[in-house]
Image 1 (spheres, rainbow, N blue to C red):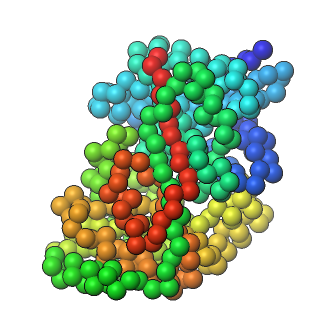
Image 2 (tube, helix red, strand yellow):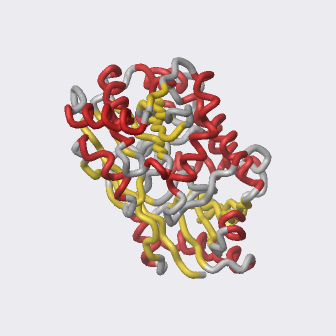
Image 3 (cartoon, rainbow, N blue to C red):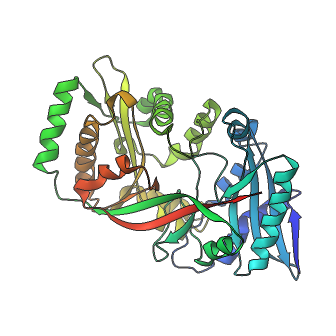
Length: 372
């Protein structure tokens, strides 16, 4: 018999966070999150997202042992301002037992009905900036720092319970050339001259700070038309600065400004932390910090993290400027492999950005939806 229990205290929350460490112990492709960050993300006293969201954390027990977990989330901006009667669920992990998934989903649906919501969708986080979807292709690959890994049976469970695929994201692997193509170089110069644009370069994190808020404004403008879009709130910007800023290297950020000094495009890439996080196994101490620090300086793989382009400049070749700079960066740093982070499958405009890098799709992930 499956028993579904709500998390009541910090001890329960820690069990909630640690469950996948048991489920995926010694798995070659699962990359563990940092335990401290997970606890803070889920803590109503720490994460500012709870200004506009609420959550229930559920644990599934079988014979006295934890066999599954799920976060049931309501994003009030999405529900009230965007009129989407959606119940989110995330942090979903289970053993290969359909009754466990069924028990968690049934309890989630009860919560959704209590709040007059019409459908349930996940796995997703509190906002668009968090991990979303379950892996449906690419099980033989390490996940990136901002994606989840899961066993193939997750999708089978959802389909067996009457869920249908909703949003689908694709990810690409690219081989980085020794130098930028003449076409990219020429086009980059042409676009700079035509629109009187210039590249911003940063030597330290202090120089970046005045531009961070504008970057998030550009993200909102860039992706506002996509199906999963929920505007990034100012307090979330502050939170993400604190969460991800330690991982960012100034020379891995590329920005383009117009003749008035206004930021019109940016791209953030990062050295891949997948192998380092796997070695750290969720903890900075005693040796996790060393693996992460080493990954920042000795790495042949990088992840394309975020790209934002002002709507007035979309489709005008500004990406050629960004990729000219990224190519030079990768060549200086010895980066030979690039990975895109998840992109909605219908977002062909972003996918076309990689065409000069001979991209190969190597992962796919989806959220699943069901009427309540």
